[in-house]
Length: 212
View 1 (cartoon, helix red, strand yellow):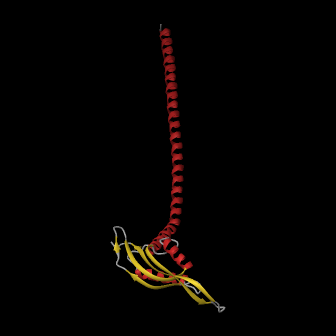
View 2 (view 1 turned 135 degrees about the horizontal axis):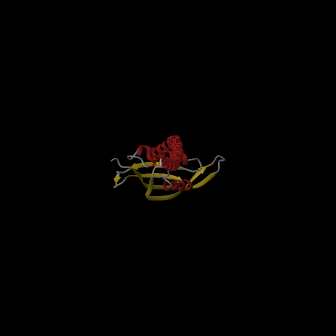
View 3 (view 1 turned 90 degrees about the vertical axis):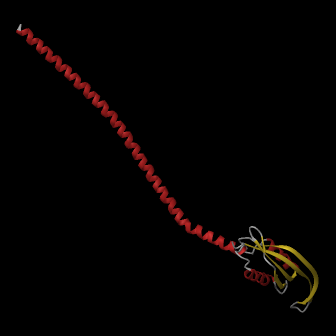
């Protein structure tokens, strides 16, 4: 009887051992599967972090490069803006600037008047300023004696006024009266030549910015 009881106990112990071993195996497999999944998740996150770091570094380098380009170009942009503002102040000044306009007319006369082609300004008469909503006008009347060629050049100067390149004060012709005469002159060879001269009186409107 005791021998049967011993065998039953031994059998139960073996069953317990197998059951325990099976539970340990299941627990080990579960822990392994869980650890494997967590490792994959960690690996994926780590890869994403590395990619983000690379992207952030690339953006940082791009920002640095763009800032360097901007800083290098900033002075050039400022210089161009200052030059444009200076040119604009010459062709469309703040205030009537009639003194500068008189100098510019004198400069026209010096450029155009030669021995073969005359251009002489005999009178400049400034009128009262006319103000509009956004700008003001300085009217002036001039009496000029000119050759045909210089008369045409003068009209072109006024027509092209306001150009940033030519730097001629912005103006236009409101009225013009002219007469033609023939004038005889002696050239260097002692020969007498006849030239058609235009005497004209022109009224010009010179534009400027209002003082606000």
